[in-house]
Length: 185
Image 1 (spheres, rainbow, N blue to C red):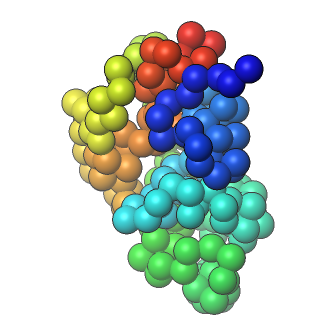
Image 2: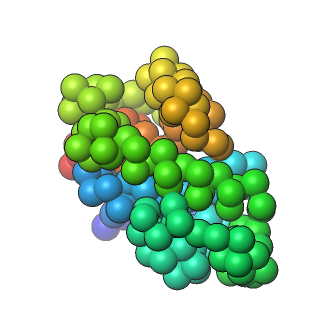
């Protein structure tokens, strides 16, 4: 039996369907996973998400499985290695932002005990249900978090990127009501 999915995940590449069915919108509390998604979302800026998903394993390998402390300490040699890595997006600004953001991420961990505590405190640990197929690109919440992250010094964390991030980590459940994942989450 075919399951009803959100329209963006129907009749598309299997990697997209698997991401929709198993990961998108699932509440995430693990800091490594939260860092991974933050980096991937920032690299997605201006590109299709499918491009990032298809390169995800390469990103994991190239970015030391998103070990935030390792990424925070990348030097010029590592930056050059990443700039020449055909398996990832080789945008210098995004690579530098990932390193910069790793350092800010660690500062947030130190301040809040974990990045998870920080990001989930904006909703008092509640999952927001936001959609009936309206597919917003920002909200007052994403505006607030993007502003806070930018004030802390993060890069490539505009409101659209942060809205997408909040959907990906499950703070916002944006599955359509008919989608089998809407009620599961």
